[in-house]
Length: 321
Image 1 (tube, rainbow, N blue to C red):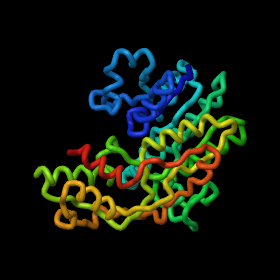
Image 2 (tube, helix red, strand yellow):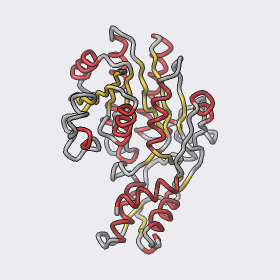
Image 3 (cartoon, one colour):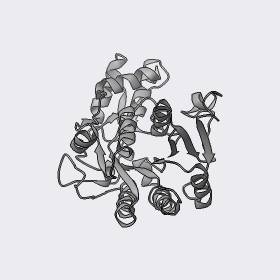
């Protein structure tokens, strides 16, 4: 039985990855912040199952900004694979809390790399990088060789972390990989992300619980995929004979306006009757033309996005009903 350690285990990706690895008969250990509430966690159905929790799934309290607790967990668990998903992952919020974003996302990754370097037995690391490292790229779609030009604090922090993963791989021979992941959603997406915000609002307006939805730039475009496809890609990256970096993306761009059409259309409403734009929701610096080329992942891993964008948004909206 392989043993995996997941940071950010209670998040959208962490919860789906936990289920995926349990399905492959892994022993799964998750790192949980002491402020995380397991009562309303995406893992509640597993945490409350005595046949799973304490037998095949284990949670440990530790923080990325507390090296002592994290190191203790690493040396106790002795994982075969580490999936590093934790960090402050909201782009808009990173403008409000840039220091903590960089400390958790950038320095937290560096601390983890240093600990892995000291482990007595080898382990494999997957680092969840982001398309935001490209910012306003000079080419579209982007590949693994596209220069990093981040335009927000979150992107800067992720770019630092991704570069350090490469440094530790080349300098120390560690099996460390970046999954450069483009936007990926699901019914478990956080409520402050625009996809979930729109789907949730469409359902609430239909049910008479909300009067309007206020948004910023509705023409912003992203390469949106399904989180369940992406966690499968994470696992595939760590099963390769050699460590490398891969883009996980759909290769197609959609706008916020497209999400509005699909979400409100699912509940039989016309979004223009209920949506208002507010300049306060515009970001100081917006990334542009972020479309990923997943060709390397398809050629070397056999990975591709299997879920359709349209089906995903409809599923998210119906889940809110």
